[in-house]
Image (cartoon, rainbow, N blue to C red; front, side):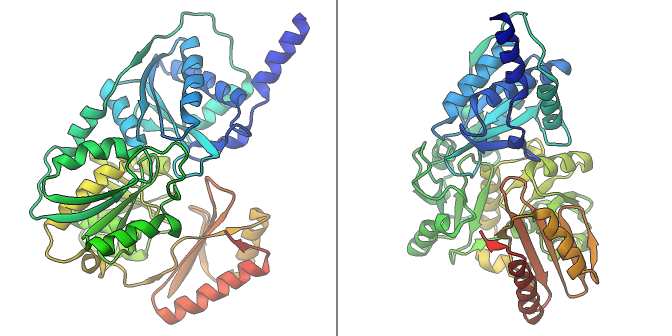
Length: 465
C-alpha cells in the first residue's frame, strides 16, 4: 500500500498536460487537457512561485463561463493548503481582477478565464503583483516547478477573504470624464462579465444615449459568438447601429479585456487604427507607444513619428505588450485584435477604459468616426487571415525559399518586406493556426500579392480556418 501511494504521488506530480501553457497565458479544453490534476498542479506551483519571491497572498477571480466557479474552487483550495492567503473577488472582468490586485496590494493573482475561446475551453491569466506573467517570466518558472516535483508542504493554511471591488472599479473608470456633446452608442456585451460593470457605468454617463445587447451574464456563452473578431459576433450590433442611427458601437469579449469599435456605418475599425486615434488625441511629442509589429499598418509608425511620438514594437500577446510598455514607460499600447493598454491602467488593458476614452474623443469632434479614421486607412491591408496547416515548421521553411528575395525578420513569426508591400506569417499563440497578414501601398499590388501568397499556402495543403 505504501509503495502504491508513493507512486501515485509521483505520477500526479509528473503527469500534467504541459501543452496548456501558451506564450502568454494558460489555456486548454476543460476537462480533457486542463484536467483536475493539471489545475491542482498549476495552483500548487503558483503558490510556490509566489512564496519564492516573498509573496503570501493573491487575488482569485473568474469569468462568466459555467466551468469557471468549479475551477476557481479547486485553485483556491490548493492555494490555501499551501499557506497562501486568498482574496476572492468572484465573477469579474479580467481588467477588474487586475484592478483588485492593485487595490488590495496583493502579491499576485489568478484570473480563471479562457477569454474569447468557446465554452469548451478554460484557463488562467497569471500575475505577480500587477505584472502579467508570460513564457519569458513566471509561466516557465511555474512549469519548471511542476516538472521538478512540487515540494511537500506542512505549514499553516492560508486565510480566505471575500471582497467586492466593483464600486471602486466603477469609480476609477468614471472619474474626470468630460463630454462635450451627446453621443448615441450601442454596447454589445455578449453575455460576458462586462455587463456587471457596464450596468453601473452607463447611468453615470449623462451625455451618452445607449442601447445595450446581451447584458445579462450567460454561463453558456451561447447568446452570440464569444469571439468579437468573427463576423457572426458582429451581425446584430451592426444592424442595431444602423437601425438606431448610432454614432459608435462597442463589441466586447467575455472577459472584458478586448473591445471592437464600430463606426456609424456599422464597420469594424481595425485595432491599430484605434491605437492611432487614441495616440493622436492623448499622446504628446516625446511620449511612447507600443504596437503589435507583425499586424499593424506601417501608417501607424509613419504618422506618429511625424508628431515625435516614439513607437516601439512588440510581439502579439497581452503579456508581451505590457512588458514592453513597462520597459519603455509607454503611455499607450494596442493590438489589431482589440486590446488597448494604458499607463494609467497599470500598463494594462481594459476594454471599458478604452471605451470611455473613445467616447470622449467622439464628443470633442465634429466629424463622424468614419471620417476621423479616413487618413489612417490609406494603405491596403488584409487583416489577419487564419489557416489550418499540418506542419507549421515546414511551412516556414517553404516560405523562406519561395520569398528569398525579400528582406525578412523573425521578431514575431516571419515578416517579409518589399518596397511596395510586406507580409507576415506566424503560428498562433493560443490556437492551432497559422496567421497571415499582408499590406500594400496600392490596390493593384495588394490584389496580386495576396493572391500569390494565398495560392502558395493552398498549394502546401493549408486550408482557411
